Image 1 (cartoon, rainbow, N blue to C red):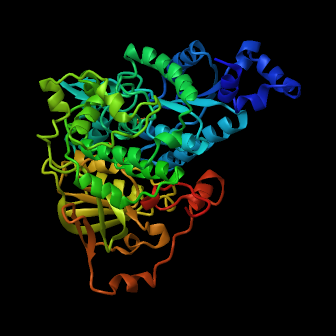
Image 2: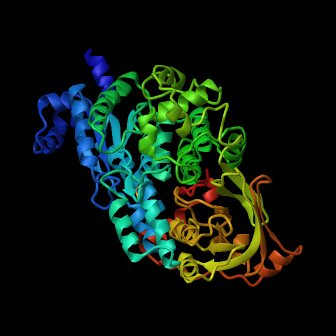
Length: 569
Ligand code: FES
């Protein structure tokens, strides 16, 4: 490589370490063992989201170390730095969940700030739990320096009474236990069996959905996401990622070359085809927003209507992410959609090849087992996708529904049971006070109202655990975990905090959820909502200072990805 080319690759780090005036800066680096040769090489920031707060990221130090080896072997100087993580499962069901969506913004902000301040030439980022990959991608787009993302991988399944289980089975068991349908001993045995080691929650929940999407978007090396956290291939693939980031830097490919309208539409397509988490709606909108791409909820609905549902993965289906790895991982999904003409195959990837070129170089098993986990496009589980955007007088700006019912649709009309906040709803459900045919409405849980748009997994799992798999519905301006199943509508916009119609619903109102008509409505006489609005008052904020008050001020509507925005896009 000539000096000119090396200077091009070091365009940012040269400013921090070249020349006599940078002697103090080099001195600081020398204190950490860097050599003259290190200063002549591109600086690659390695964002490592390792932490002891969650098994999802518990092993990432090992993964990041392999990435750094790959960077160094390929002629780069790796510099590791951390970013925060919140464990969604451990934050679930209490006030702590208000920190989850905020953590996405802090991850994005912290990676952006460190990479900007240190003048890295390129970035590799290793993350696991739900908000990690969206936060990393948002930062990558903002920085727009060559970046490769590596997902830390799923947890292996636990085994209980002859079946594969994950932490979500434990959440649902809490409801069964409260209803007297599960003994203390069985709950204890399940708790001990469900999570057998490091890695993210095992089904097609939010983290695994985003792991699949980061490959689909072209920001990760193909074939890396489905490798389980403890699989021996993970170290090898991590070293390859280190080499890849140097290659991506050499090619000059930047995140905004990869995150385009085409790649975002591919992401929506895959989420719809698999029945991925409704959080993917928020995250893809936020990533697109950072890239300056105009994306609306209608894009999700249109693509979902045109997409066959082929993923037989939990929570709607039968299999876990580790099963997907066994039959070919993400390339299997992408190959099936590509051959059906359902992907933009010209979308660019971090390798410099198009997505189509990348997918076609993967040998794929076509076995009966593969067909059970990812159905062939010509024989789908359902003819259209599992994501639906609902509108109506209860959600003028939209609401999100993931269809997990085997019928492929949700048609539910019931009587409202209204709760201000998750705690009141959980207490009523645990006490058996919610009846078949009711629609549980949980409000003041939106991006601003919560703040932080809590996920309602404890509530939805308690409903399911009490045997109300499809005869009790829920409507909320909060979110759902990717693990939620049943007729559950989230992201209702405008949220209650800003005076959206959900703030005006009363016990006994008749609410209709209809996925075929894309409808979320309340049956009230004309003018009744306006009449109720006259007496509505916003509650006092819970936080007057600190991070929660700050993000309460900055979050946009869920219908725009709940991204923090200073100026209107
Ligand atoms: Fe991290 Fe579930 S808590 S993926």
